[in-house]
Length: 231
Length: 280
Image 1: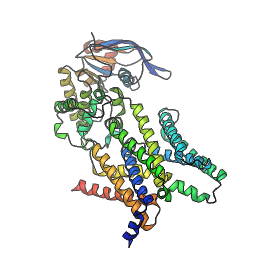
Image 2: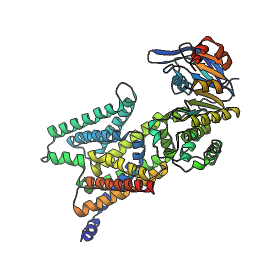
Image 3: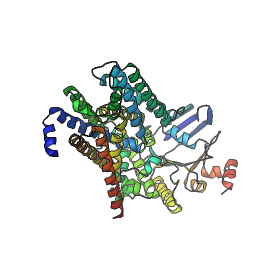
Image 4: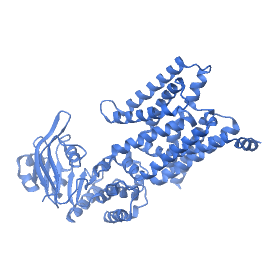
């Protein structure tokens, strides 16, 4: 069974419909890049998937033993976070807040998960450092480690390289790719078309009648050719 | 000489009550200050304190023996309204706070002015706004109530500490993994309302924000972890309250503003240490 099963999904806000009758399956191991114009509904779709917004119509079902809130999410950075006084450890550990539930403190299992994911993201040396003193690339690795604490089956990334320099962007993409090779399913919003095509297995092109295709077929489709010509 | 005067005062139980309650209030207000400052909610405290002033005016006119019976629920209700309405797009959060706070201030003063039978109206208004000797005239019941509420606030804070941190740092992530972020925002707002009503006795409604904001800002100059900032803010706040109250007793200055000035001094010291420490 597929990880996520999306049927006849319609999303939008107030009286504006962003996309209609979207149906596709996300299978374990997929790397899906979401592309499209600004305001086409990329973020809205992702937030609907996360359960932050409810769909206008249609259904999203989680299968294959994946629970609805068992998703690792990497949101875009907010202004609040830029000078937030918190250590890397405190932030990564907060990725386990879903498992913790109403229990006041984190237990040793959760601390173990946090340590494991810090090693995985190569940020163990920053454990006690303050988040606000790290570089942009390092900060993204911290947030990625936090996302992995919530789930190492499915990661949803909202423009993971925005604001990073070219070197840090490439490092970030390589990290994401190696996670995907380890079996983590990736859904990523990207403004960077060439990277989206390079790393993904599937493309979701957001617009009124959204398109979901494997990368090769997307490149041969009419809209794919039009859209990728510019690069 | 000054010490003799201090020890003489400390003989009186009401002075000791004042000191205990003052320190408890300072502890509570500093705990949530960190979250408020980081969430850019500093002005909610300010807005709510004006609401509390309005409610206090109504309570005095109604000649309630225990003002808290009215002031506490009204302030909590307004905290919830500000938070809920602030999230809707129709009226922006900051505009909402401005409306509620200025409105409450105007209504409160009008009611006091029209209905008050007191011979010293401006004195009453001044006391409610800036605090004064009221902390020194606390009854045993008020001390117990303040102590109980303070213990409650500290307990809530410790139990939900990790969730409060998570929601403060990243609300969208928290929602995505199933944390009830709106619920925690509501909890924060209610606790702030309780703290403000408590702190009104100490520093008066216009100066409460200082008690909430300064210790957090001071601690943020020096510490890099959320835990460190929270703990140090609590310590600074309690020490400043103690120093402020003792100084005001000896020098005969108003309690509220003396505490706030002590907090400002602590902030300046932390600010300088922060700059020097980063260079060194």
